[in-house]
Length: 338
Ligand SMILES: [Zn+2]
View 1 (cartoon, protein in one colour):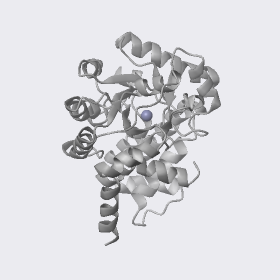
View 2: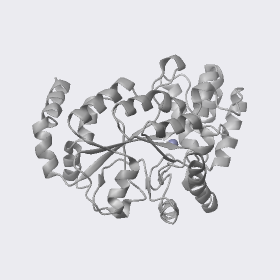
View 3: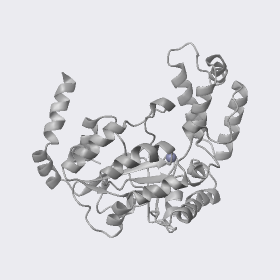
View 4: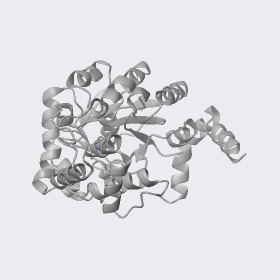
């Protein structure tokens, strides 16, 4: 009953008439959505449902939303122009193969200039994501061997949520480390459980190719830099942080001259994964702006946030999506005093 009521309420409040009134009341703003991997059942990849993406784009087109690229949106702020009402922006992090294979044709069908933030040496097949390596250890290691890791982190292998508890603990431990320590720690875990981690990414965890990335541009989609090797940039030395940000732009531009000069921080939480130091590096570079992973709207007249633009995680259902895409969540945000 509570769910049925919520459905009715959101559908009524985000109906055409209510949207027209709501958008007139709200200051110009844009909801930026952050997407990661797409569900590919036969490869065991969990992720966004392509059917939901189609439905959301159908809704946005029907209701005459403006679909902006990450660069277009930051240009509105830089140039001090008002963001068009009913604006929505889609961004995808990392550069996994399924993002090109599954989502690109859908974004192209709806003429939505989604921005793919690419980790350059991941696309070069010179490295793969450290959190994928933890997943790989879980894929390949028998449960009794995983118990050895659990023991090391004082997790009881008998509890029902053992696997997810252990996974979350390992990811949290790595998030505190610099890249060198992440790789050393992963190697020690691999040795402990007897599952060697391959140098090259296995099929499930591969990046798209540079050819795929160039095809995104031909489809009217956009690409931007997302570091060279995907460390947590705040955990690196200043020199390495500069290199991760500036070199990824150099490498991306060399492969794709049409790339957008818009950076996206890895992991992306302000004060943890990046901070004032990284924002200053972006500010002093050729890059015009940068996106974070902290939830919130991008608002006109807030140029000071140009190197830490907020995004919402892409919701798992249509109702939540409507709330975040329209004035409804914005109104709630204002009521909370943000
Ligand atoms: Zn990332």
